[in-house]
Length: 104
Image 1 (cartoon, rainbow, N blue to C red):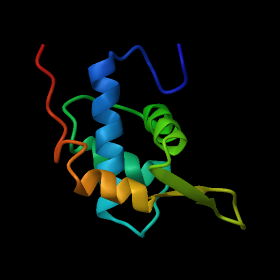
Image 2: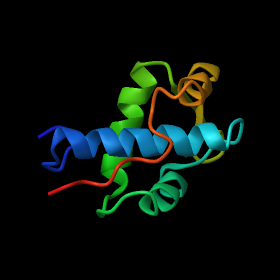
Image 3: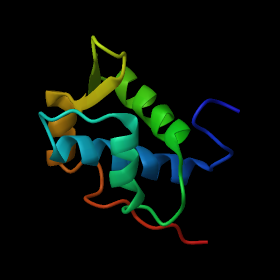
Image 4: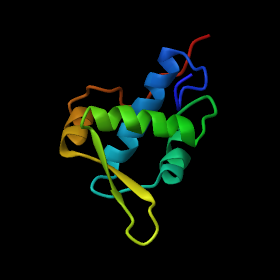
């Protein structure tokens, strides 16, 4: 099992990614820590998630160039923010405005 996977299916992982990029794009240029992102995206999703799942979503979004981070020089915490490409990705409607809830 990959980091951030926790056995979720593809639709759930996609919903987490959508919620994370929308959270960061809406607050651009502000940067948030993983716990800050987690608090905000939990209200968007109809299932519980934890920091590992947000980390997994951020890793993929980082690899795609949609998010970046800065490290706090006094403590080492990562502060994540959407890149210009990530903001445009959301603004152009390439992700849903709100993640669709699961249909089981």
